[in-house]
Structures are given as C-alpha cells and as structure tokens.
Image (cartoon, rainbow, N blue to C red; front, top):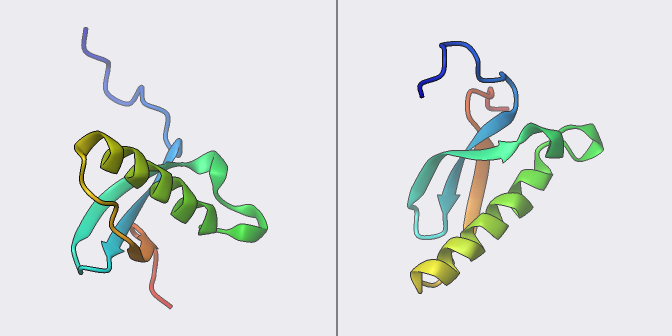
Length: 78
C-alpha cells in the first residue's frame, strides 16, 4: 500500500557523491545521519561507503574501486 506524502522522516539519511580513482561517479549514496557529525564530521561516511562497496563487489564478482573523493550533496565547496 502506498504511503501518504510527507510520512518519510526527514534527516534520516545524508547523501554523498562519490568519485572513484577511474573518474567514475556515483551520486546520492545514502549514509545514516546518526553516523555523521561530532568531531569527525563527514569522515565516517567514507568507511560506511567503503563497506557498501565491498559488499557490492563480493556479490557482483567485480573488484572494488578505490574512492578518490567524497562530497556531501548540497554542501558548499570550501
């Protein structure tokens, strides 16, 4: 059954764009917001995304790509 609009909790996930060493990009990778913030800022997102990539690589039988950079969607560049 379909949900009513606006029933999904906001702020549950943060979204990141990931660029790999082969210059391919994956957009809007979801990371639980509870992992972020504090003294580490967005750094825990890298570990979470690397774990996701490892699981995807195992299931697909392809080698895991190394991450070149991660940036939060909608964040201003310094």
